[in-house]
Picture (cartoon, chains in turn blue, green):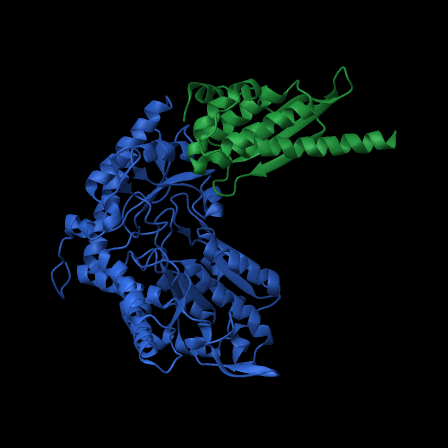
Length: 427
Length: 153
């Protein structure tokens, strides 16, 4: 309950009716039980309609063309920017539309290596031998590999936080890891495997105290938490539309204005230039500086509709529903003998990704049995291979929940795991 | 998809373990899931002087399909000439890529026909092929070494 207003319990059946794909039957007539929103989320009609309407009514290349459609398309695209900025409590000028969270993170990493050959205003982004880039062992590859590569390109040293056996960030050696050599800290806001939510605001405070930049991977948090960039305290936040009910092909990099203004671009070309001559070119201010080419305009409009949809339900209600599902799932899955959940077992500072091991049954095989029952989960290392090694497992099975999942579906998952155990003779 | 033969090989894999002597060793991984296999191939000459598979030994971590497939592979190729074994391998690959639309040749594939169901589940094809790809790689390397030695004579 919030002081500002009532917490409306989510009407999940009404929500589900908004998602056409949830009406599908799969594998010989089983209703679809979709527990893979951590990989990608489904789209409600208003999002599908918004994208479709753009193409049928307003389609045009934005920021160019002195004609009516060009105006309408530009208004729609820039209107989407304002809407998305509002969703995270940011200024529209600090919102860069990217392809995805992955691209947004690469954008910052490449800006930093490009800073070596950019003007003096980019000096604060230059890193080299003796400098340290600090990440974590919990990261999705999108917030891991680009920083490894940055270190390879510049000679900086990569360091990282470990994880606890519980699947949380190990902050016990934070004093040795955040030092005056630290130039950047990159951390997830919510693990896509363990669900753990690290104390990003506190980590950011410590990083800023030594003058380091803070990059946050919000791919799993922005869709599932109420995120406000002022409260977060980071310098950059990357997230993806397709994980928050929006279309694929567009994402967001939020960055502090003064940082975006000083950063060199990553992808260059049309749309982001000021003057182009054969001898050299100059670039526009942000956010346009980082949006080369004709942008994913229909998709941005779809993402804005997704923000409307989520705010229409109220993120607080979405959060509450997910927390209840996660608590139920943790209880139901942990009750199965031979099953070990990788991650915290309570919902405190913990989101809705429930990854688990089933003794003597490989995740592929667990996933196969579940698939035959119509239950969609993810199997493997979920683009977090070092995290799996750190937790001592080869691979895992992951169920991830979102606003359109039900408690019956949680029961179906637990039932499916037991069936896999019967089939493979380990029950 | 999970025929009894597959589950049997999964529970009791044949020829498992790394053994000496061998001619080449490889390590293969499936990047999407982390399944891995380390495989050794030892060659010999048959009565007609043809290169033949003396031994296939391996260590591996993986799902029932990848483990069972590697076990069946070892059964199928040990004792055959390299040429015969490569034919079996090509036929198995054809089966895997068939989307379930071809009748597998049991004369060539033997127990490997049990994997015909896998072809209908594209996500598991790489599982079934992991051991076979490793075996082809190790055998090619063993042959190259053998050829190099032959050249030196």
